[in-house]
Amino acid sequence: MPSLKENIIHEALRLFSLKGFSSTSITDILEAAGVSKGGFYNHFRSKEDLFYAVLERARQIWREKVLEGVDQVDDPIGKICLVLENYRDSYLIDFENIPGGCIFITLAVELADQHPKLADAVNHGFSGFKAMITGYLNQAQKTGDLRSTVSARAVAEMVFAGMLGASVMYGINKSADDLNHAIEAVIQYLKELVRV
Image (cartoon, rainbow, N blue to C red; front, side):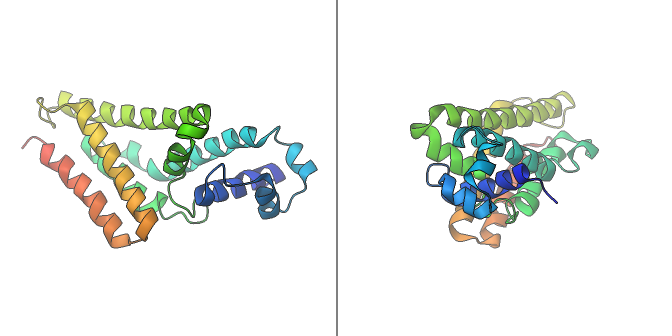
């Protein structure tokens, strides 16, 4: 059974994914978690303090779901394809934790103007993800699997943009078919870059 603190984080994660940070009140979180104000403030100094705990939990869930099995794949392009498949097949459909869709996109868009410090914390994860994809692409170029004329950084940006677009559209229409087509298009794009 989760601790009171873990339950507060879980319910806040769900609410932030559905309503965003600013539109979720402390009262909303208290009601969802079934906790008193005192119980909340025993664990968190403020809503912003809770935000960072939620962000860390969201990152943990993302790593568990999106990176599952990646270390067992030798081929760097295969690693990226598995990341994309896991994002589609495991992460985006995790309605227990993120019923509103990818929480990082929700928060990044909302917080950019209202809470730039919090937005920077979210964007740090985006930078890390793009660096990981760039690293895999650089490995593929070293092994000769990816054409040397390809810009690894530009391709990483395309992969990232493709994932964002697929996630946003899935959040709007909840169409598994559209999500599948969008992710498959990114995978096909990657495969076409592979040296034959």
